[in-house]
Amino acid sequence: MAAHLEGFDIDLMQLEAGAFSGEHMVVGGGPVLLQGGRTSQVLLQRGTSPPRPTFCFRALPGRGLTVNGREIGARAVSVLRPGREFTIRTETEFPIATISVEEAHLRRVAREIGLERTVDSVLRRDQVTGTDSAMHSLRGAWQGLLGVEDSDAADAAHWRKDALETGVIRTLLRTLATETDASKIVAARSLD
Image (cartoon, rainbow, N blue to C red; front, side, top):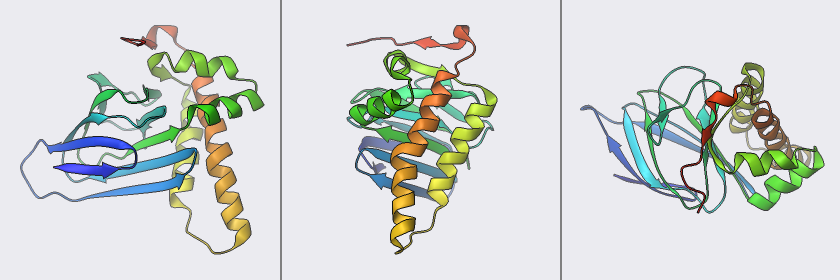
């Protein structure tokens, strides 16, 4: 089964027998795109990441997310570099979270908050570990934006655009900068 997830070239394979149901949510456009999904079955997802850095993490701190053969812990963020092949396994009813951001935008926001070096470091890695509180903030920002109702009010639309394009990226960068256990950093297998 093939799926269209914004910017991803992806094939989905159900790994257990039974009826399948799922949901997929997308918020954003322009420089930032948030996506999330949940399925009724264990899935193997293979494909190519979007043409911009993509950060993948557990939408809830529970079990069930493996990226490129590595378990993604409750404090971990997987880094999918642009246009790279990946394999993701998600468990039944497990919500996955992704944030895709244009690199120039990521760097601009990082410069605004003094975390320019964080971007260079993170984009060379496959996985980064943050603190519990930073991951809690990141999940909250991600869930808050996916849960915002559409509104015709100009101020609500402006708030949402600012929260998406700046707020969640600041939270992401601060989370990535809190890396606390250097032994859990997984070096990139290839920098080409």
